[in-house]
Length: 68
Image (cartoon, rainbow, N blue to C red; front, side, top):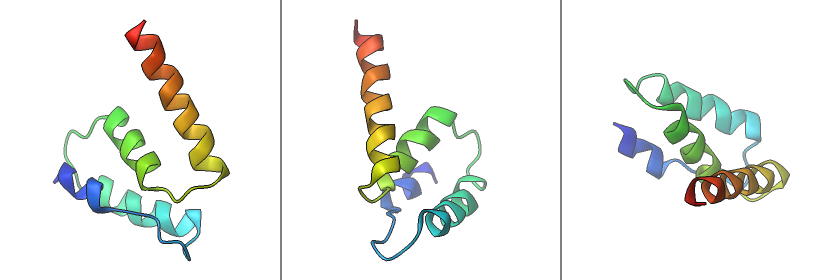
């Protein structure tokens, strides 16, 4: 069921709120879904914009810390 998250994308004409409602309705049905997978999947599904750009920077920073 977690593979379902890879097919979710925010449509260009949809608001962040619309996307989050749809994303949340799917993620609550997935058992034992880790917060890391949820967050990463959400960020990857967002259309480009201030929220997704800032969040991607945060992911890259965290991965950089892990690799050091």
